[in-house]
Length: 304
Image (cartoon, rainbow, N blue to C red; front, side, top):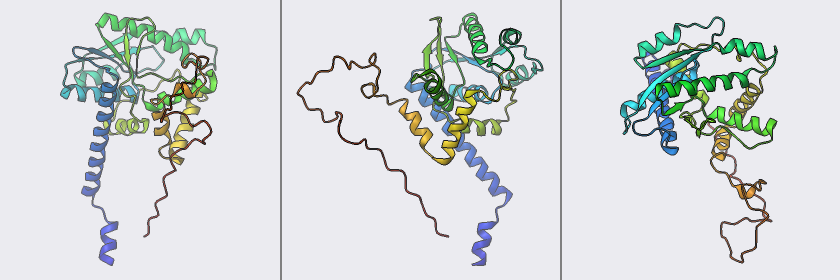
C-alpha cells in the first residue's frame, strides 16, 4: 500500500517536463487542425494567394501568423504570407518590438506608420468608446496597404469567442442576429477578408501565447476602457464555460445551424406566402409538441 501511495505522489522533474511537452504538442495539433478546417470549410486560402496577416502585437494575431506559417510549410497549395503592422503612434508604443520579432522570424513584413491615435483622441470625448472610429480608420489604411502589397487575402486574428461576443452584442444592443463572418468581401468591394481562427477557442490561444512567449504589446487606446460592453459579454461567456462545460461550443455550433423558418424574419423566409401542400414531411415541424433537447451529461462519480 505504501508503495502505491509513493508512486502516485512523486513526480520527477523529467515526468513533469514530458507531460508539459505532450500537452503542448496536443495543443499545437489542435490549433493547426482547427485553422486548417476553417480554411477548407470556407475556402479561405487558394493556390497562389498572397495573404496579408494583420499583426497588432496581441496574442491572437501572433498566433495567427505562427499557425499559418506552420500550415504553409505542409499545405497542398502554394501561398505567400506578408505580415503587416499599423503603428498608430500611441504614446509609449515600443516601435522596435515587432520589427525585431518579424525579422528574427524571417517572414516578409511591412510597418505602416499613421497617426490615427491623435485623430481618435481629438474626435472622441474622454471616457467614450474609441473602438468604432479607431477600427474604421485602421480598416481603410490596411485595405490601401493590401492594394500596395498586392495581397489577395487580408487575414484577421478574430477567434471563436470574438464571434460569439459579437453575436451577443448585436442581439443585446442592436436587436440583430448577426456575428462576425469567417470570410467576407470588404466594404469597398475590393478585398476578401478571412478569419482563419474562427474555430479556435481563446483559452487555447492564451496557452499558445504563453508557450511561444510572444512579445505582447498592450493597446493603450481601447485597452484602458474597462467598462466596454465587449469585455462584459466576454466575461459572461467565460463564466458560462466554467460553470456549464460544452455550452459555449453548442452556441458556436448554433451559428452554423440556422433555421430561418423557425425565426421571425420575413425577409429570410416567406411566411406570408406559406400554403398547405397536403404532402407529409417526416422532417417537418411538430407544431404542438414541446421542443426536445439533449439531456445534460450525467455527473461522473469517482470513488477513491
